[in-house]
Each structure stands twice: as C-alpha cells, then as structure tokens.
Length: 563
Image 1 (tube, rainbow, N blue to C red):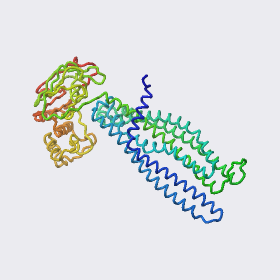
Image 2: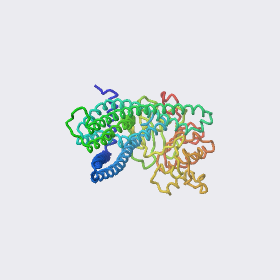
Image 3: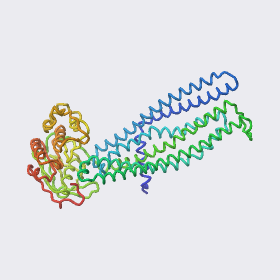
Image 4: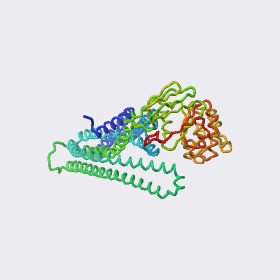
C-alpha cells in the first residue's frame, strides 16, 4: 500500500533535515560537550557554595569551597562562550548547505522548476525559509540532547547529596513529556501557517515595490496599500498565535519547575531542622542540603529551554517540508545541458509540438528555420506561442512532437543550449550596484577590458560617460534612473560579454519608445553578424527590420499557452 500523504511529507522533511545537518554534526557534538562542561561547572559552583557556607556555619576556614566555586565559575563561563561560537557556526553551515542544494538544483533544472509564484514570494521562500534552519542546528539539536544528558548529570550529582531529593525531582519531571509533545504538535501547525503568511507578504511587497510607478500612474495606491495591510495583519495574527502557545508552554513548565523545587526545599529544610515527620533512611548535612538545593533549578534549566526550542524545530520542519517538496519534484524538470557551441548554428523546427510539465500540448505543428547572420522573428499576438518556442531551446518547454535540429544535432525533450545562448527579455533585471557590476553578471571572471569592450559595442558609453562615472556609475534598486533603452543596452552588453553564438530575445522592445527601439534594432542588426538571432515579438518596427519572419496564428496554440 502507498504511504499516506502526511507520512510521505514527514519522511521527506526528516530526510532533508538529516541531509542538511549531516556535515555539522561534529560542531553540534562539540557544542553539546561545551554545554555539558558548563553544567559541570555549575555542579562545582553548587558544591563549593554548599561546603563553603557549611564551613562558615561551623566556624571553620572556607578554603577549598571557595576555590572550587571560583573554578566552576571560570569553567562555566568559558565553556558557554565556546559552545555558543561552535553552535552558531553549525547553524550558519546548515543554512549554507540547504541554499547550496537549492541553487544547484535551480541551476540544473532552470527557473521553470520554481514556477507558479511571483519572484518576491520565491525569493522569500529561498532566503527566509532557509534562514529558519539555523535554529535547528544551533539550538534544537544540542538542546534536545542536553535536555536528556543534562538532567541526568544533575540528578546523579543531587543523588550523591540526597537520594530523596533526586527522587522528588525525577517524579516531578515524569509528567512533562506528554505536555511538551502536545505543545510541539500545536507549534508545528502554527509555524507552517505563519511562514506561509510571511511568504505572501514578502511576495506582495516585492511586486508592489517593483511596479510602484504603474500603481501611481493608475491611482491604485490606496487599493494596493489595503492589500498589503491585509497581508500584514494576517502575518501579525499568525505570529501572535505562535506567541500565545509559547507563553502558555513556558508558564506551565515554570509552574511544574517551581512546585518541584519547592518540594525539594521543603524536604531539605524540614530535614535539617529535624522536624521531617517520616524516616527517610538518610542523614542530611548543611553542606549536602545546600548543594542539592542549588542544583535543583539547574535540573529544569535545559528542559525549560527545550520548550522554547520546539519553536526552532517547528520553524525548521515547516521550512524543510516546503523546500523538500520542491526538491522532490525536481525530477519533473530534467534538463540536460549540451556542450557550448563554437559557431552559430542553423536552428530548425520541423512540425514541433511543445508542452509544459502537465504534458498537454500548448504549441503544435510549428515549423521554421533560423540561419546564422540573420534576425529571425516569431511574430504573433499574445498567446501564439512565441516565448514557448524560445524556452524550448533551453529545456524549459517540453518537446512532445516533431523535431528540433541545432546544426547537425537533434534535440530531445529536456536538452538545453543554455551554455550557448544569451537571453534578453522584456525588462532586464538590474541590481543595485555599478553598471560594470551589472554587465559582469553574465561572466563574473571577465576582465575590465572585456567588460568595457562589450559596453562600447552595446552603446553604453554613449550615456555612461566619464562625467557621470563611466562604467562605475552607481545604479539604484532595479536600475532606477535608467530609461528602457539604456536598460536594454546593458542587457545587450551582457549578451556580448557572454559571447554566445545564439541570441534569444523575448519582446526586447516592448517598453521602448520609437527612438530607443530604432536605436536598439540598429545595434542588433550589426551584432547579428556571426550569430543566430531568434526574436519573439509583435512589434511592427522589429518585424520590418527582420530578415526572416515566422507568423504564428492563435490556432497553433492550445488554451493556456505562454505568450
């Protein structure tokens, strides 16, 4: 019988957490050892204080008691400091491991692997959710082990002073596992809901920030503000729900701990006064009683922490559940990158049918040929399959019928020419930084001379002159301050720096005014020499400048096709 969906998700989640935490186990173990050493320091402090006070009460020199207590303070402080450092490194290492796996999968499978949500939501999920894994390695893993080993160590130390005090502590702690389990299950559900609300708010904020100009132009500020406020209030409510569970669990644990410590204190006090009503079979001295009483709060310390650490575990589990689901379905997007082509190839589509992951054809019977040194344009209205045809060359759209030939090679479904292609979209992504840094994204190891040559060919030096800082001119977020034509020149410079034999352009002039579009096309015409240029567009000016026109009709595409 197949596993129930809930069990399958739990198995995937645990597997992902084990995989990502595998290389930090040594640091976690060393951190735990430091925490246990700090607890041993507290035992020394309790012993030193107990025997020191007893010596003072008996009129004897304090001597050894103070030395042992001082040594305990030093050991506890140094061990705690070193343990915190080791566990902080373990948390960062786990986050880095998870992000590395995600980005490697993204590189192999392509951006289609993360389809179905806006860029802001996906960014929040990758960055913010992986950050939730830090607490799993830095706090939960050592805290869970310390909650078992620590109380046992304290219990043994208490038992050497007063066996009945140890029994009282042991009995009182027996009721806690059930309560902690109930709290943990409730926390996990609320953590998952809270992270979903955070994803929603992050995605909404990023998309509104990117389109702030359009929102102002169409007087949608109040509407979008209300939408963001609603997402923010939802996140607040779900965060407060987690805090309510946290406060409740902490209050209950404090209650049990206080009652247990009080029982130990009452027993020790009555025993020392000689008024305890029952025989216990032990003789208790002031040194032993005071030592056991000082140790009693430390018995509950790691258990108290474990309750709060369940929130770290719940956050990590919720994040791993979503991320492991992505990784589980990466097989749905198998991409095989082909070696880089040395020269511009002929690209031939022969009665090609294309689909997305659901295997339903969205483009059928598509035939054309793109030759080197020419601009080949796929023209048609939105929904006619222009972008889908381009994406087929980088393995994003699936080949379900017909033949795609690149030079003498025939592509199969999932084959990608990504290493041979420079892709320019409608709105090039620009980061906050210099023009030089934005161009170098295409090839980070490029020299300064290569970057400048690409910028000169793309016409960037026409507007990025020395008076403005040249290529070191700083750009704002999303390239604020540049026109649409200037953005496209930077995208063109990236393509040149990549030195790819194939250019794919998806509506490259969609947001350009007529003068900027004419200038862009003039440069593209020159740069097409020695390259195979394939363009998807319905621009009349671009169609007029093309060498080979491939008209696409809506009837060639099934419902739901990409543009």
